[in-house]
Length: 203
Ligand SMILES: [Fe+2]
Ligand SMILES: [Fe+2]
Image (tube, rainbow, N blue to C red):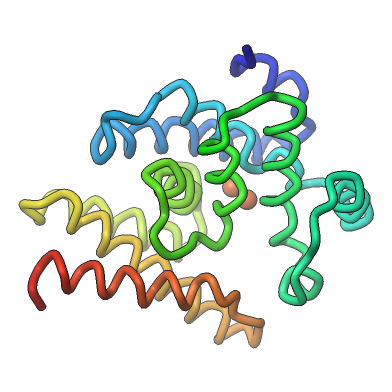
């Protein structure tokens, strides 16, 4: 049975990324406790610790892992190598550390998010964006937004859905401003959560 120490001792990341990784673990457990208490907090922690396991690997190392695990890359991923680490980390979490299917799927989707995320996928995706050590202005903005919404909304799931929509809005705007390709998953996810909000609030 994998424990946190087994993952941490195999990890080769900078101090900054380690701090971020531990921040994601704390934040994901908190999000799970608030929104999805049935989630196994230990599993959530392990997935969080694994999520950026390969983030600092070179592009060549990433491609080698893709070949080894039979990961087929989309055109978007070949254009934007940063997206590949989610897939290689998920493959390692499965094969080397034996994490559950749900945990591996949350690692797999953590960068882009997607429509109809499972509770597990949701907490890892959002924690990666808003954990306390993230200093990028977009992350700070989303963190503050979530904290305000959780205070104001009577229904915590509405606060969560609104925060997910905001996250996709911020990401898509940033990609447009930077002249980058927009990953299709972000657009589909945004539309999905807007409809989910309409269904909840009747708007
Ligand atoms: Fe990542
Ligand atoms: Fe991350």
